[in-house]
Length: 260
Image 1: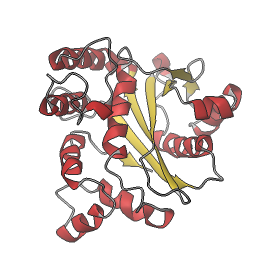
Image 2 (image 1 turned 90 degrees about the vertical axis):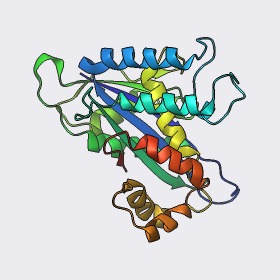
Image 3 (image 1 turned 45 degrees about the horizontal axis):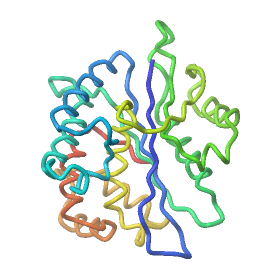
Image 4 (image 1 turned 60 degrees about the vertical axis):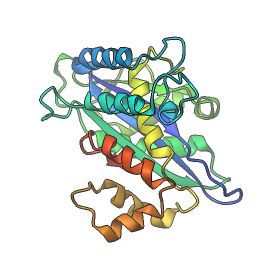
């Protein structure tokens, strides 16, 4: 069975009367790997020394306002350890797949519509199950609670969208589950950290539909293949190059993020 965890992000914009930016992070892993992932998460969480009483969010990585005794380097170290859990112990096999959907939208378009459109693009990328035996064609969805989606779209309609866009061989487990994020949801926390490392370093003032494909192509390039001219071009779309470079090193732990 596949487990799917989804979080959304909305980079800040100074533009009041133009397009806004919206994105989703989608994390997919096999249920057979979930125990290893959760055990690894708990180990990294304990090592970090974060309180169980305060929800751990990606936005706290560069902020020492919460738990001042935990340094930024320690927080970055946790993020790196978290993303390393996407690989096998040898580091040779990918155990967790990550998809990022990013698009711009105007005031006439509701966030729920953008959310669903991006999710549909990701669902097309998930492909078909390996086979139908031993419940390998079961798929479960856990979505960070989003009032814009749950308030605007009926649960039955949302289920229909998933059924229509997924490969016909998939069977959805029960229904999509909208959950309130907490430290008890390591899958959602994984998606939240990925959202943070994209949300805070994209300059939405320079992002618009015409440059989307180019921007995503540049993001998709690793340090090994991007040249100096392209690096300078990418900086036009990045709000904080220093932090983005740190984030890029951490995100590079993940194998083959798929951008749509």
